[in-house]
Length: 456
Image 1 (cartoon, rainbow, N blue to C red):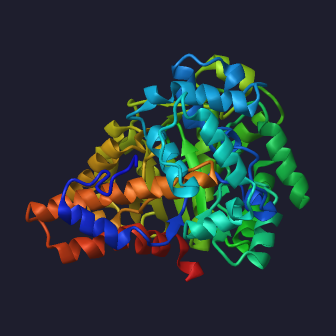
Image 2 (spheres, helix red, strand yellow):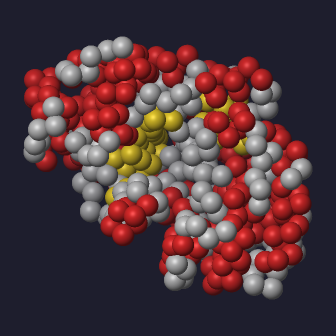
């Protein structure tokens, strides 16, 4: 047995709290699972396809340990990739990937052995046989893991037919889209103009002017809303959301869409203008806006130029003028828009926690990415409890790119939450009855009410 009953729990009260929340349904407001995977309900041919083929966390650890790219994202067979992962996996102990994969093997396959070079063959064979069964297909897995609501992340102009299909024929988890117009914020970059044109073509709108783009965006926002979307999602490298006039934004857009040279300031201005427009759409529709602030995308050139975007070469930067950068934005939408802030660096966590104290309707989300480990989770939950209000925390998100880890990621969060509250009870800071209710609230009721009240 790899994981004892007291895994991540240091007090008897923590054990009691975890027992109270362990089997609650999962409500996830942010994931990268694709709706078509669930709609088509196809399984996986082998354990690498299920655990490693889409997981940037796995790729990054393999690269850190010197595995050639050919045996990570390249043309090597899935079997070879799995055996390489097994060879280096003992060296990953202490990283959450080590916990997640072992939890997956235990919870979904009944495998209690440690993954390593001596067990790779047996685990490959046992998992391959079980993955061929219908109960290991996406829809049944979501039922078994008690996933009640799952929000996918979908770009502007996305084909939402898989969501329509799921709404009609899947009686398990409610799968709803999230509107993510990030591609339009990469002003002037490769693919930006094509994205603009495709959006215009979808709705039959001339997007040669900024007004045309805004009309197309409004149509797309409405289309997402008809498919159950109530959340928008935005990644911002720079926290710069200053006010920009219509005239200035229109001039910058005209140059960008015509393929002319555009200044760095014009790019920042147009991004900020679009973010304010997105917020106006969300406010009018009663949506929640999620802001992920501080990711520096595709930082490693060797990955970006050989594999393209989103290949696991992202970092974060502590140098972020958060207070000054989003002041115009938060004040403009004060009282009109629900905002959830996700910061990706511990240095930003305290500033974000202080910011939300000043704005009712602005809340802290789970900043996992580089902080989705027991150490940072504990630190973050204690920070919120002592500086803001833990009861207002937006709750767990899996941020997962694979269905198989939904339960594992949730288990770790709920155990850390139970341990944090259990210690507070042991220290006399609250009675156990209050801690039990708070743990249940944050594990289930809070994210459901904040993000998905329309589904109740």
